[in-house]
Length: 258
Ligand SMILES: NC(=O)c1ccc[n+]([C@@H]2O[C@H](COP(=O)([O-])OP(=O)(O)OC[C@H]3O[C@@H](n4cnc5c(N)ncnc54)[C@H](OP(=O)(O)O)[C@@H]3O)[C@@H](O)[C@H]2O)c1
Image (cartoon, rainbow, N blue to C red; front, side):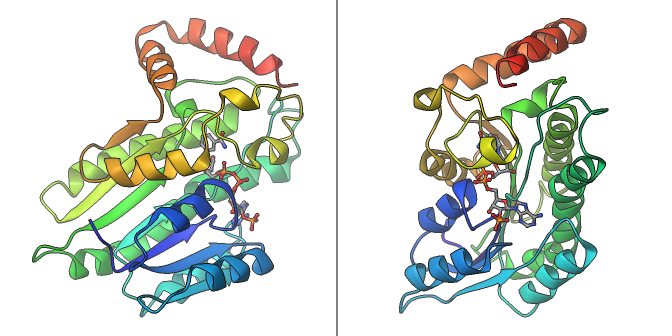
């Protein structure tokens, strides 16, 4: 499916940037993140005669930032929204700085909810007559299990997964497709930002390009897409094993990153 215009959050690096690069060269782009210089650089690199590429720097963990992005999208023919921006923070809830805990909740959950509610009516109006709209939520393989030492992050991704699945059902008779994209460990700045400094298995991680490409391929074909067979097996096992067992195993795995 070729979209007219995609709004991508967290487009200044990692998976969001990979989405911007993976979309067809005719799809106009609205790129957002906080790093103004990186966004402007990417916008000038990706602009061409067939499309416009605009960027806005805004902190989606703030009310003003979310309003700025919604205002930026108004009047643009957005028919694909990629809710990608997200952060994690390693540590016990009681030890983590309160502002980091709030940031995870606001950026990973409140921002996608507000952006989706604001943009969906016009995405619906623009779709139909052979054109489809799309909503992608970048959740995580972490969405399928309680994860001690990553409690708020994993819970925020579980929220996104359930939200996307429910929304897909609500929109099943409409020309708008919904996808919860669930990557496992992916080579981006995520780990450094999450204070997960002891990662030594970079070679086992997926590339952001693969994650974005699989997301675009899956949209319209399924509602949940877990990237990679190993992650798929882990998330499938987590659904059937006792929750306490899964949480204890997840805590042991997370201790490796401390
Ligand atoms: N990497 C992984 O292993 C992995 C696995 C599963 C799911 N995910 C999910 O994938 C998504 C993208 O992460 P990534 O791996 O690509 O990490 P990343 O390279 O750190 O990118 C995160 C993006 O989010 C933006 N962002 C962070 N805080 C923001 C804020 N307060 N307001 C607005 N934008 C903000 C960043 O923009 P600025 O730098 O401009 O602030 C950046 O563009 C996240 O939702 C993450 O949870 C990642």
